[in-house]
Length: 341
Image (cartoon, rainbow, N blue to C red):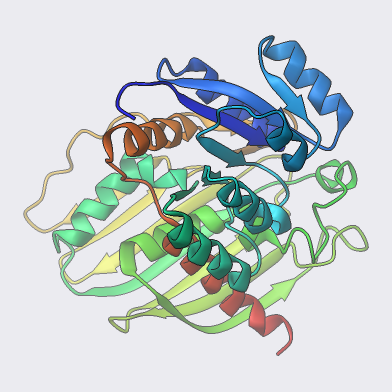
């Protein structure tokens, strides 16, 4: 479509939907055409923020408006992601799917199958790949700077308050939310997958220490894994940290060096000791998404929207695809199998 504006519609105008809208609206090569939400208050908010957009309560109602739409951005609750991607594809729209791709890999498979039939693209929002420390990690792993890797450790220790769950009709619900590995920490599982490929989940343990009777799953957990090269690793996480997010970090111990990327959001190189290697200057990381009562991962959604535009206008797709999104969901499913063990 060359240099024509890429026309976006958003379904789900909550916190993350609003973030998508900001990025679409601010990009000179895109146009925000419509917003869909079942909540009339969110529809009013969208109409107030963006004067010339169309609004609807359902995708069917949006379709009946006979608008020119290229991409549907799916920003609804976790359990609806695949369903809404499928609705978009059925209308011959591309789709941008917020993380996780869903909480059921079978539904992700249905998306992939329809994507091929419709000859459209589903772009998965796994935007932590765009952070400079993540790109640096990817380069030293691919260039074998660390040699044989001996051990990997990921820590994700965040804060979520009770209101985060009580003010939502889906967060904290096992069948709609799925758990912290889907909602809070899928980005960091994706980084493991991006760096090391598929993982074998060896064991997992879960605990609920803070949110008794408020949520239907753990607030704290740990699991151990093995990479395809037989490297052992551990992933430790909690959303029960006092007052504010503490840490998101990854440490890699190899035969030729040790590195750690840390900070609250894997936003800085904290340690680098590699044989015959000098750490380059690494660009500043975007600040975290600020949602008022809590903060999320780095605000990299601008890279996602720009990537979608390049894929459609120039056929240059560098974004995570639906198969990668499904792989992350499958990894989380494999961890959560130990809930019943």
